[in-house]
Image (cartoon, rainbow, N blue to C red; front, side, top):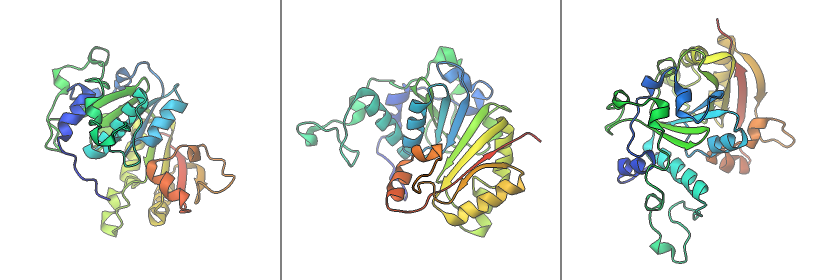
Length: 279
C-alpha cells in the first residue's frame, strides 16, 4: 500500500537529525564511526516502520545495526515510534496522538521530543561539509542519518548499489524483509534477490557473512531460492512457514509490523538464510 506523504516531512525529520545531512557514500569504509563503538555491522535494506530492527538492536547490544529506508514518510513513523519508546510516551492504536487526558489536545510528537534527539555525533563520525549534498534520488535537501541508540542508526537514503556505499567486507549480515516482488518477468532484475544484487552483497559482506530473507510472496521466494543456488550460496536455514508451531528459527522471534499482522491471520511467511563466501 502506497504511503501518503506527510505534510512538512523534511522539517519533522530535521527535529530528529538536528539538521545534519549526510552522503552515505562518503562514509564508505568508516560506517563504524557513526556508532558508539565498533562491533559487527548488520544492515536491514528497507526497514519500514522499524519494529524488526529495533527489537534486534535491543536483543543484541553486541552488534551494530543500520536500518536503511528511502521512503521518508515511512521512516518518520519509525523515528516517532523509536522516540516514544525512548521517552516512555504512550500512543493510540492509530499511531497519531499521544494518549493524554484529552487526546484531541495532544501535540505532534515532534513538539515533545528534544531537538536533535537522534543527531549523529559529528566529531566522532568525522562529518564535515563534504558529507552534505543534494540527493539525486529526491527533491529534499539530502540524505540523513539518525543515531537512534548506541547500536542503532537509521539511514534515510536509497541504496542502488551496495558496493558504492560499503567497503569490501564491511558488513557482517544483511536483512531483506518483504521486499517489493516486482511481479512482471521484465522486472526481475529489480528484485533485491536478483543475482546482480547478490553479487553486490557478496562484495560488501565479510567472508561467511549471511543474508536473511523473508517474504509472504511465494513466487518471489521461489525465484529468490533459485538465484541463491545460481550464485553458489550455502543454504543455512529454509522454511515455507516461519511461524509454524514448534518452529526453532531465531528469526521467528523478530517480526516486522507487516509480518506480525499477517502471520496472526495464518498466512505463511517464507524464510531463507544463506551464507556468502568470496570468489
